Image 1: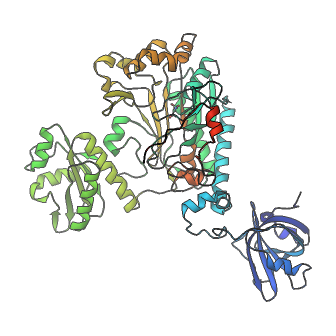
Image 2: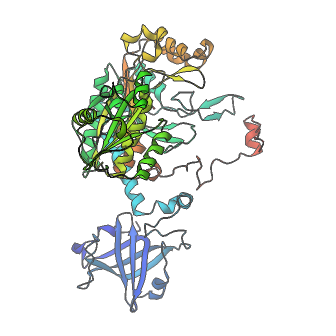
Image 3: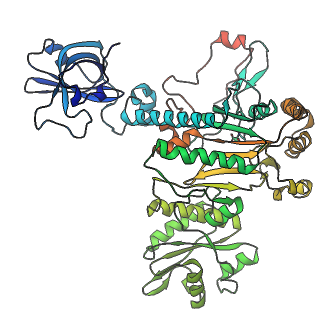
Length: 588
Ligand code: ASP
């Protein structure tokens, strides 16, 4: 071994011992002929001291940041006044006897020892250097802890981990597939799984009963927001379960895991609240509500049933709703601030925004002229609004009003600092619609995925009113993020076939794409269900990071490129010939 101890583990108990350490030069400085080096390995830092009398002083004086050294020396107490209480090794230093350079380093593109604002593209190009930084080391360790906890917990609960293929066939989750050409079957392609969905269901047909996998998923999506072309899920599936069995298992896992891996985080409630999809959208304007704070949307249509306000009247007549949000302490907002909110509301799709400010001098705001005192009183009664508050109204179609006020709610969460980052507000959202209308293709899409079981009592509505069919799908949400989706699955061939048909898949295609699954269902498929919490987003939240790239060792950038290895890149003519592929470049 190159070392007898790790840099970060040396304490005053080691005083007098000779130790050999190996690591990177974190910092180097000279002080009146004495050279100090902070030597770093993954356990931390320790101070190395070379006196003017040190045998290879000149060499030590010439080392630079990030050189790799092996140092042998004696541990001694730091002189009085020179201790560093901020460092676990701050009481001691190592008086160097032998120092060897294991490898020098070029000047670096950015400092490892300082958490400076380096451009992300530079960090990603030199990811192996970026990962040396304390913050990234911390994130990698946390990720490891989370995954280890999951594995151990599920093992204790009778699950077995099964690896499923990466080279497979289309497994739709609403994105495009990544295709891999086959050399030995010209013109044929594997698809990388968008999730192991079908495979884990087939494992239930295979009698596994409790399966999990730390699974890589591949989805070729236009990279909106915080997405990666490949990402990791804790994929799990169980046989002979109802919805609540799956939820209890996952809730138990997360409730035990959070304090174990991040003791400073608190769960808002235990057991977790459960909302229906409709309730979540009505109360919070989102199917992934941030429940760390209140500020719920309130329906006030009835209060304004006889309103003189034209906009309110017209909306109610057209079957729309009037909903509002009470923003605490913002009654003094200026005209400009209110205009900005209106612009924001319009960007969310609303026609406009009406406001009432409850000031000490009376009611103000854009709706003030049109509201009667008794309406204001009723409003205050219903919403709890008090002097100093600003009330925001959206009168529109229900979906638009919910979405707009939901987004305003999040805007004020951030602006007024309403949500504690160390609070984890987990909740279940259940009873999702089974289908979503795809306006572009004029057809129904599966709201979750096509393997989700519809509510049995809704089966008769299949042909008459697909929009009203609910499914046995559920989401786990936390702090405004969707953390996991899952469902009870279809295990009957006839229902699965019908769903594929409803989704507009031609019979020949159903057979070609999913024939294996349909056939499997005819050989004694047990009732089953499961879900798949996303690991990247979870670790991101636990690490207080702003995006998932910070918790993935080698992420792609937002244009789906690996900047370090420069992937994707072109293939050689020979490779293409072997794959029977001709590239037809787009005309610029
Ligand atoms: N396969 C689903 C997904 O990737 C999760 C599940 O239904 O278990 O979202």
